[in-house]
Image (cartoon, rainbow, N blue to C red; front, side, top):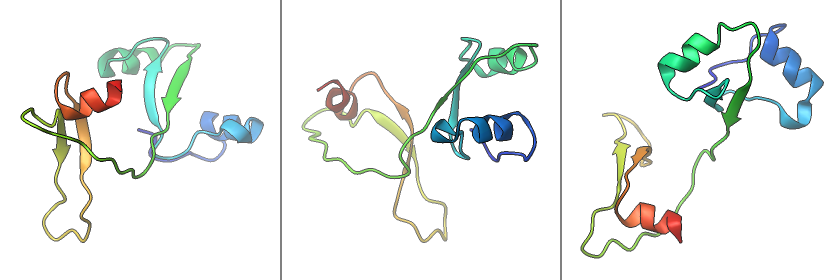
Length: 105
């Protein structure tokens, strides 16, 4: 996840050159030189030439799932104690369940 854009460095210069497709804080790094695991992306980021793919997800969304007799099909983080939010954060979509079925529709 992109935490911040440092002024004068590579992403900042990219954003100045291509403002319509600027990289923003909270964008997710999907791959580096085609590598998708954390270890291999960290190795590749040190290469002299890199191609980075980013993904931007919506901050919030809502949907209606019809669970029936199956599992929901995802993992999530609950809000921390004392948090004033009622939102949850999805951490993984599983192979089977109501959410993966919804995504396939």
